[in-house]
Image 1: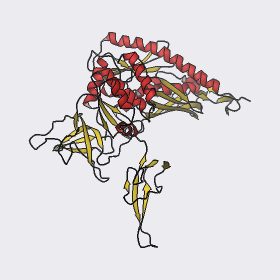
Image 2: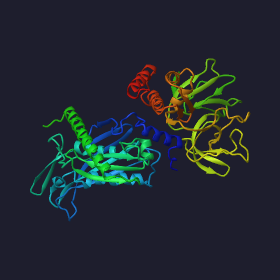
Image 3: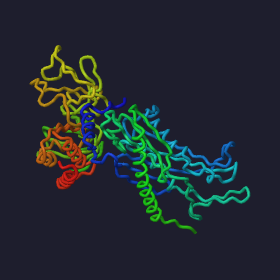
Image 4: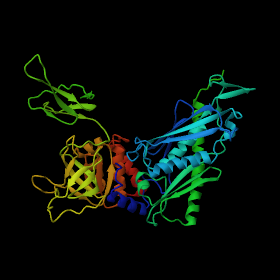
Length: 282
Length: 239
């Protein structure tokens, strides 16, 4: 049984408050909730929190034989699990429309935007390549699960380091992290995802990073994935509210600014964490 | 006050013993003696409390999931109309039934017209473990509303179950503190939902944030902390 949609008073109040440009959590219309990034003991283990929305992302790598049509490229697979743990709206084995959107968007942002240099994952052409497995667990959903999951997945890829390998002839030697420093993945760019919510009443301006109620009551969502270099990766619009082209361009401009801020924040956090880690190389 | 775990025996002894939430009496047949011994066992983890004379015992803990108990006031959302009554979501595992005649002044001819999505303030009249809970919007003896019924306007805040129990405590700081700043209306349900209303949207937002900040499941601020938060909001939105 899915819980009913928000009650009439909640809906009416949200709209009256938004009309006075007041958001329930005291944010400005184009303000993201405070982001928290926590790194686990392993490399590639990241917990990302966007307000009360929390996502855990984890990367691991193993060696596989590449598919014959692409012998020089490594592979990436994304496993996103949205369990009822995140919210009682989600059910096991019966993905809702929202869950499908999140899974497909993750695939577009992380895999199809060519973030990871797949050729650098090749060890021995046609014989051995790295297979990266990105697992995303949604721990708590308080709105805008998509942005949080994208951020967690990307930061996990940036945080992850694979063991060094040495190839002599046909012989492949894997050096454990204790003997040789593990190598970070080579990433082409880091796209960040930003979701804006629109409301059926067009006098309400779009809001960035919708919270739980805003997410449930919106008339349309537009998700934009771009990197700090102003390169657009994905634009996805869902919901029936029509948009003027100028509005979309305005939103893209906002997202560019936010992507720069977010990129600086992520880099500083990664640096902080890396300096805190004692990596012994003997 | 001590911490107990489910299954732990509780030394509750009184001639006129009353057990509150989280405690259960089990009969164990003792073959050695003729009379059967009575054991009081905790069914919940939490802190054990008792009244001054030891006649009332209960367990206090915090949780988010509501388990209906008879006579508790709750706030529900109408989920479905069903024949004579309504199906109401009260945040428990099963939705509750609310009879269309369980309102003040309701008769076969004159039934309340609640839309799907309306909020109701009701009392749990029946909470049996094998049946769906039942609600009523009046006092069964006097047939008067006693404050129950549809809640119009306002806003619904979700909080932890301990927070809403604390809000019902007349000695708790939060509601007097908020009331001193601006007029407000409030209905506290014991299912982790608090309905609030005030004249201005920014006041409602301030109340929502104060309740979330004082929630032991959230920031658990004390009176001075909430005052600082309100002063801070005052500066931003000029309450």
